[in-house]
Length: 469
Image (tube, one colour):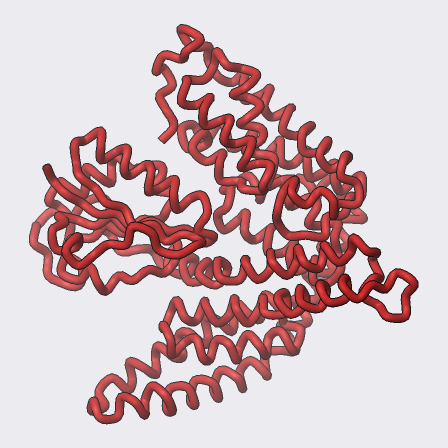
């Protein structure tokens, strides 16, 4: 039996990571191929590939949208794709891996034919991977800090203020701790974009660039600029100094590279801070005004963004914008974002429950899991259904999410926490209205999705539509 390896990882390390791993395992089992898959999830690396695993493997499939250690695979045939392809094209990837037509990483080609997945990652995918490395490290700080701040509001919106009648020492302490966590958002984002590009040398200049961005008001936009500037500056310095004798390695890594990169990046960031802060402020004000002047338009945009790629870059753009506005005290925007993110999995769950004769047994089982995923703000549960028929399913998901988001903006619902789904209902100012908005959007979408499917031959679901991978 042929043996291959897999490595999966997505920016948040929650759903896509394990869905891709499961898809690869199922495809390998179907094709009678032995596979071991390393997952780079939110809690760290699981089923890590050993040296023996790598040496014995015929090929390694790396389906990741985050930085992983690739140097260990030098000299072995490697297929590198996005995590989405790992989910959607698992069988094709396994077939390619055992075809003998994959080029060797870091070495000369051992076969004349180049496989379909052997092309180098595009510039866009490389940039996206670096950006998402920063986002994936940033999100836990945002979630922890945002939820702590939101919990402090249970004692009153001004419970942190010693001069207010609502003042409570416990609430003030929680808000202070949450504020410290939220305050690290931009520096962490910037540092880990730079770290993805240049490893540890980039991390140093990245933290400095991020701190400057946060202190000068250039915020998220400045943090992204600083991260790429710091990363490529450090990478350029490391390459420029690669010819130095080994005796100077310590001096180079501890003194020369940090000093030059921090000085250069820091000065550039200080000069850019004013214009970038102005642009950042304009964007935030524009979005804040839009929710008052055109709540329907904003809800449609947010709904479409959140359901378009369900945890991908477009979804993350809406989510990160919501967290930034949370930091400025705007709790209306996040209500729509959260509702739009929660809707797709609940829509799928309702559809598989109500239209049982249109879904296979495996699909109905996956639909039940989507209740749990939706209730806890994990959008990715809808991906396997969307992947089977994207041109039909994704527009329905976008419609459902848009309806939910529009209703939250029209009702002026406030959600002060950046994550948690229905677990943070106690913190929502209109919890019943918020839940109803989500279920109205989900219900309308579920009806459309259910009727878009053909009836199966029997209630158990013959495999006319296949199973969820």
